[in-house]
Amino acid sequence: MNDLAVQFTGVSKRYKHFALDNVNLTLPTVSIMGFIGANGAGKSTTIRILMGLVHQDAGDVNVLGHAMPDEQAQAKLDIGYVSEDMRLYEHATLGWHMDFLRPMFPRWSQSYAEKLAVRFDLKVDQKIKGLSHGQRVKAALLLALARKPRLLVLDEPTTGLDPVARAEVLGELMAVLAEEDRTILFSSHNTVDVEQIADQITFIDRGRIIDSEDKETFLDRWRRLRLMTPHDEVIPKLPGIVNVGGSGRLPVLTTNCFEPAMVSAYQERGVTVQAVESMTLEEIFLANVQNQREAKTA
Amino acid sequence: MNLRMVGRLILKDWYLERWVILGSLVAGAATLAWITLGGKLAWLMGIIVMVTILIAIGAQLAMASLVSERKDHTLAFVMSLPISYREYTASKILGNLLIFLVPWLLLVVGSFAVVLSSRTQPHGLLPYVAIMAVEILVSTCFVAATALVTESQALTIAAILLGNLALNGVGYWVAHLPAIATGMDGALVAWTPTAYGLLLGEFGLIVLMLGTTFFLQSRKRDFL
View 1: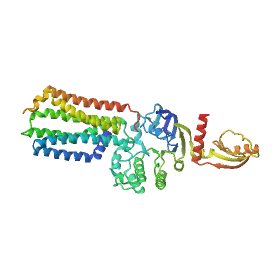
View 2: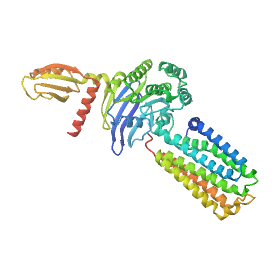
View 3: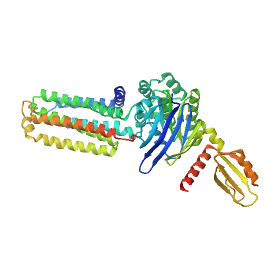
View 4: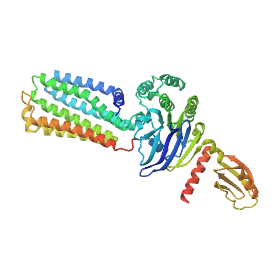
């Protein structure tokens, strides 16, 4: 059996003012990938291609062993999809939505759906129009999870939620995810959300995948070095230094492939390493984007 | 094509449009009763009300189940289901047509019954009534096809206006065709070759429009 839930090979899609350019992306089964990019970076386009809702101009897309978009109907039997711009039917109840979906998905679990309704504090006989935005997101999650999908695709599900509702949705989502091994693609421009859930991270910027790795490796190899030089001099830029900031005798270096040997290499040059700081995923994302954009324009 | 899935999507639209269907049936039945009980003025007004009801239902169905699906962002939910866009298109065309056919058939059969049972209305009017009833169906299919292909509220409204204008134009033109006009006031129903030809042309136009809609939909590359 193929151990890749999603495989993009050389995928391109061109619009008038935006292009998804030669995207290569793999998502192994039983892993949770955080798909991070700024607004308009290409996250939703990539996900729509994954779902077969937008046809790629070039390249191959394989989802759960199905070629997309041709085999989208079969693939979607095993996919739970929730997106920020997805809405349920306002004049129907959550219960009606559950009854509507049940016969379509062979693995649909009614008992699980009812359990989730209790857990998410949703009333199945309440019309969707009477739900808050947070409750609507939870309702959409319930309908996706009760399908017992092999692949869960969440496209910015927490966008537009207030901080309390966002924390609540994420909390419930993490609790549910902890119960079973699932393959998830979670896209967001909010790195804090992604950091809580994902074990794989992919950055996308201006239609190009700029980095993809497991989260721990990301956090391990990115470091900020605070240095102090004896004189006001130019710091030698060792391999792996992607950004030099700070000023004068107090430069701040950012590296994307930190090794302890880097510290000793600077010390041997008479430079004092004042601190080696870990970086948050947000800082890593910003440094990565900046580095890639500079490299492209250089 | 997964016909079972198409059927489920049609039933979904029937459920969501159940009040429109029910309302149109009640309004249609009331209009027919009014025509039956009233005199010549009631007949004339009743016909106008019936045509208005049918045009309104066609417009409402196109806006509610086709244009709004994108505007209200429920299209993303529907397209997350295990269906292809071909099945979505089939469900929308068939669903809209079937829902529309409920009040349409009631009003057409009712109108026929009123004409045939009336002592004041000439039975020779029936071919004209049939041609105009099918013309309303043509107009509804045109509106639905425009809504499905363009997914644009503005263009769908334009199609509703165009369909309405065409209905008036066709009504005037058919009423002045000698082969139709001469029999309209007669006591007997005269199904002339011209009447058959017009009906055939209208049904052909419906098939052509729906086929073109399927073709254009199959060439779409972006659905969201």
